[in-house]
Length: 272
Image 1 (tube, one colour):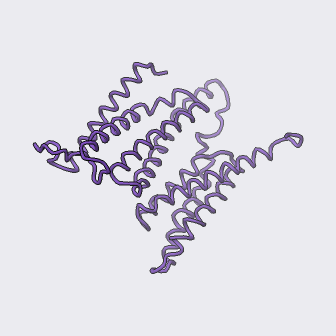
Image 2: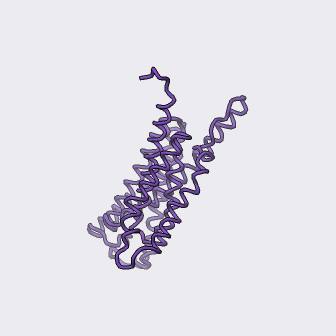
Image 3: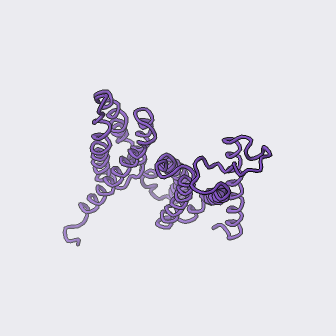
């Protein structure tokens, strides 16, 4: 476990680096306003701030300090395991998302929130999974050293791999084909049918199939969202980033429902 002094040091260093990054981005995006000798408070990195400029500068520094501090303690959830690991990781991710949302609302407004939150969620998941795989690999190594079964692959990535072709078909090939077939004046196929019917249905039933065969495979939902992300910018724009959330949620829910069905089918006949 990390000591209280160590945690405070991380928070202070991370927060200071966050403020330094805030000032650097202010200078780079509005050159001359911060260090150009002007006495005006036109250096807040607030492009359309909803508050007075001076207050925006203070709030921006506070939020960047918080985000830097939260980044600095990102590895602490891995001090525990099991349910505690998931609980602490979820809380940490939620705090970072709230901090980012507050800054985005201050500077850009609610309409731009998906532009910041969707890439943040995918990046957070990618980094978290990388950390988790390394952590779990150590557990598997210890189990092998003790002569125990290593169990399934980390996050069941090997069990998920056979479903990669379907994810590519649903999230890459299908949108491209529908865009070719879509009328130019009213893009019903890619504007309505794909995001609100085909993506959720395909994600749910493929996740259901995987859950029934392999149990909980959280990588599949992330895989579907990652496969669809390039199509957002190829076929749409950043306003369609919520499509990734749709296919992610549908795949995850389907996988969990399939896992419950798998567990129920394995119960003895006299089980409640």
